[in-house]
Length: 358
Image (tube, rainbow, N blue to C red; front, side, top):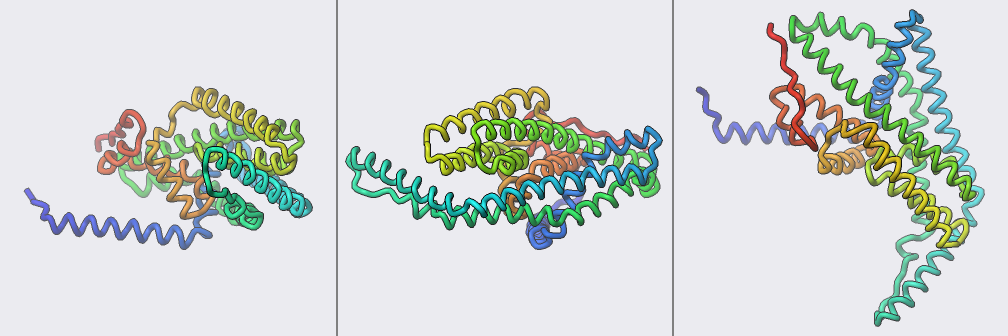
């Protein structure tokens, strides 16, 4: 029986650490190339049931691909149109909102300063240094610019998607030819598990995000809030980010409405309504329908948000949970890495995938 020496463990650990660092550097450096590819991969998972259904109806494969391309291109065009209209509206009203931001910050500074003096405080409260019009404008411009950059890469996403779907029908045959006997079955089962789990999450989450966005849009229309279509789009996108997304999509419209009207009570009423609606959908209805399908530990969720947010920004945070879900499904199907998948989970250990006897 071979005995593993301490230096061998040190070398293995060092090699693993270097591989992780190198992988992170590559992912961060090549983000502009890899991000459209990852987006296309998730879209291919979402569209695969539609492709199979249309093929079952004996529809020619080129027609199927054209249909998927038209649906994807239409969705990207709609997102780009909403963002462009929102940017144009902000450009035409930016002077008003800058002045309103200065007025609101001054009012808050006076109110908080009076409260501090009433309780015996001697300092002054300066919100303007933390929330200046320039910093708020730069932040909003940067985030919208990031989304526009991703949408502008839509041609690459559609091209990757076309090739992925085009190779999907021949993929099982390639696996059977590449692996012998029961190993081919295990590999196919692995890919089927990955596709099923991630697709289920993406489809269900997309449906609930769409419901959230539509409800938020009509609430914003009822209050006559500016930038309602853009805020509804951000509600749809940011609800892919657990917890943080719903918080952002509550604060943002309330803050915009506060600047628009200058009325704190009206902004609080809007925020309260959005909180109630989002909690009903996100914490009552959604868990009953979806269940704990991802089974990811809260620590893993937090780490993935920070890691992929650092890697690829806002889009990385949106994709972080599907990426970690796919990684966990991959790890739990390999016996040697299954303990890592168990540690990543939030509940009971996942079922073991037993390779068939040769």
